[in-house]
Amino acid sequence: MKNYLIILLLFPPLVLADSLQRLFTTAQERVKLEVNRNKSNNEPMTQKTPSYITVNGLIIRSNHPATVWVNNSNEIYQEGFTVKLNEVNKLTTPIFLSDSERVVLLKPGQTVNILDGQITDSFKLISKQIEINR
Image (cartoon, rainbow, N blue to C red; front, side, top):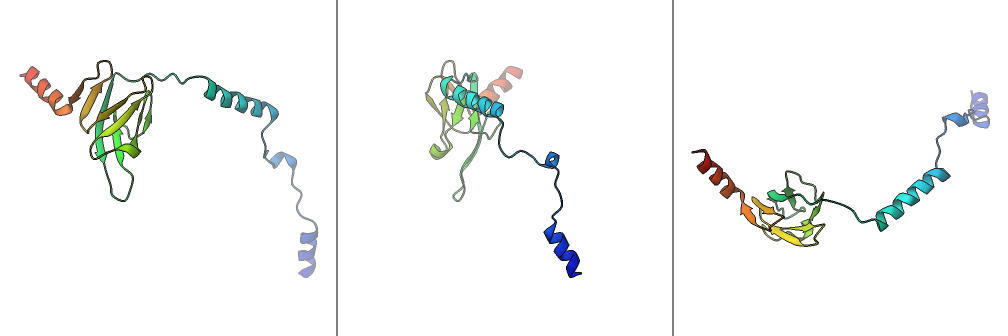
């Protein structure tokens, strides 16, 4: 038994080079990575801000970071704007607009019209729809 163990230790199994994967990138892949890295720094991001932004909900916890839903998503980086989660104050959520570099402060249930800056509450919109349907 000891002889077999010594033989196995002395002659490790042969590994075919085809089964090994590459650890480093090729020269072509490095060039593509460098081009993409430089492109993102030099070219401005063209993100179109939506016409309306709505804060659908907000949860503030004492032990965990806040969670906010804007335009039915809890992503803080959306096309055209960024939610400043670290600056949420009580019920007010600051939203940074990418194209105009201004900040809009919204509370849950509020919608801002980006074109004219008018902020409306969702309950007012619903009550107007009910009056129209009567």
